[in-house]
Amino acid sequence: MKTFQREVCNLYLWAMLLILPILVHNKYEDITGFKEVFFLGIFTLFLVCSMIAVIGKYASYRSMGADLPKVRDGLRSMSVLDWSILAFGIVAILSSLTTRYGLRHALLADGALFVGGAMFLCLMIAFFLFSRGAEAARMGYIYGFYVSSFFVVLLGLLNHLRIDPLGMHKDNVMDTFVVMASTIGNFDYYHGYVSLVLMFFAAYRADMKRGWQTVMVDVFLVMCYLDVWTARASGIFGGISYGLVLLAFMGLLSFARFKNLFWQGILAGIAGMLAEVLCYYRADFLYSYEISGRLLRRHLWLPVGIICLVIWLILLKKEKDGNTQKIEEILVKFRRPYVILAAIMLIGATAFVVLTPQGGILSGRAFIWDDIKKMYPLGSVREKIIGIGSGCIDFARKRLHMITDPNVDYLYSMGYETAHNELYEYGLELGILGVVSYICAEVSCFTSYFRAMLGSQSDAGMKASASDRADMATGVPYERELGCCAVLFAAYLGQGMTNGPNPVPTIVAFTFLALFRRYQIPDVDEF
Image (spheres, rainbow, N blue to C red):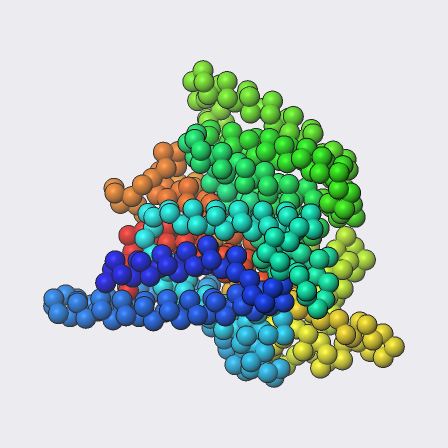
């Protein structure tokens, strides 16, 4: 039954990372809705098979006369991250079941982007089943994640050039060429997804040995950086900024990872050069009013690429000469101070976005946030505590008559599919308990990662047995995998500061969060 349970987890993982991102349905018209249906179907299969494995395992315990696992032991093994995810899922379903804006709307978020109470509940259950049942040592899912990500980014670049190889926009009722965004469904969420995969593979690249695999990853990273230099949605920079904070910390853990930071700068420089060439022949390839356009017009890729190349060559020479010990000693000394700096950067960036006033740099988003600030006090006590229900922002806005000027019909007709900021989103839709549990999950993930890398493994789940594969620099089991998952989740949080929850980025992020927890407790078998 244990093998069966692990194979079920592997199938769930491959479905979420390989199949889900590339699914399309009804051409461009129903991408997100179909992805939600696929997720709920796969989750149902995953849940049924997992329950069969659990029942079979308990039956085998009884037949052999062995002691059954105690609930008390299971509760003791729960981390702050576990409790936070549990609270988040419970609040999401309670909020949806008690909403005054329609049970179906809250459960399925069919008035938004289909990330509703039902999906959050499923993600919470999947988190616990997967983090306890998956095979921690298996890394084959990386290949599936690479294949789907490569396809998504390649199609996104072709769409950017107004090339539609899948015929998704052919004979559509509305002209969707202006928003072509691969298979993700929206260019904001497409670029948010790109930031996730870019930062994940940038972290993964550090420990790869030379060969055709590194070449394939480098080609993919150049494609992602090309998307960054020409992105239509500025949210991609939020994802990259948050991810870089964790990636830089990984660079302090070993000489190879430190050298990887500058290799990423070289790849970004190459992508910038390609972007300049493409923009020379295709003027519409660059959105000059976006952050990407401003950076590219200033040829920022040139100094970034040159500086990183020079430093990388110096580090390469020292590595060949075997003279890396002094650099590694310096890196060790910077680890603890950097954690403080990382906390300041993450908290400061979040506060900057959340407190942005109307008319500021994020004026389009701040307009929605200002409405949410006015809507929150109008809710009942229950709605302040557990929210109005997932995906119900627009229903609440119109019922509460937030637009008071009847002559401004175009403002009233605007649909708030999401708050375009996950903290505002969960603060209104899931209330105080929802947003607090979400923030606790974020803080727990990063603090447990930093603590483990610094050698203060106070969490019993982080204790390694002799058979666990530990990193030579830190002595932490599955250190590389933990780092890649943490970097991806940081990127997800960053892009979420200007985007709302969308099926693909949300499901992928929660899947890697479950992997992160699994790598913390590789020897735990609670079910």
